[in-house]
Length: 247
View 1 (cartoon, rainbow, N blue to C red):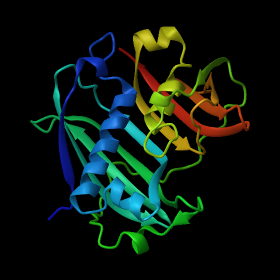
View 2: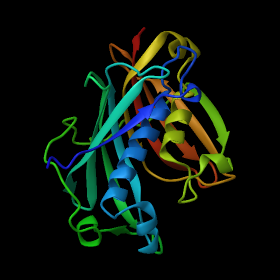
View 3: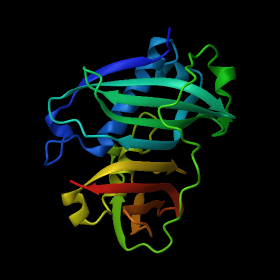
View 4: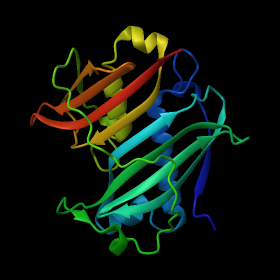
């Protein structure tokens, strides 16, 4: 047994952009859905965790994209839990088609949280026997991301009910969407994001205001650093780095 789990999806019309390519936040939704399906299959699904008063929250993501799936493409998302780093569980992904041509690969880091105290819980103690596969989709150590110290573009969003998930806070894919909204329009129209790193640092809930900031990085490529702030408490809740290439 290789301890991976694969789920199939057909890309729907509402999931693609004006170029008929899947929207970037959708890839995060599909990865999350596949991880949840694997947990369901071994008896550690989200409702089982709720009964135990624990839940998963994502801390880090690094996604590298080879090419974007298109409308009506059938894609396969394969995921596995690779290892633990302290109280963090590391989960990896490969997205491919039915002929195993690769679309993207990613790695992520998750914390198990006690919902009553808000404190981290030990995944090995609470979820014994969860299958592992000691290989990585990306060789990533989750290094610190740079701060957006001199923002050039900003946008503001008010959290809607539809932005929230089972935990009553904004789902991680929405932070991706709000982050890339501050990429200059010319880049969004003529370039493709091929690499994105994300550090989730806090949360936002219904009715709160989120300020999204970005600035170009000093590099040879087209790269941006992004920050999202919860304006109700002035705390940074997400930090991102996005890298783009000409279509």
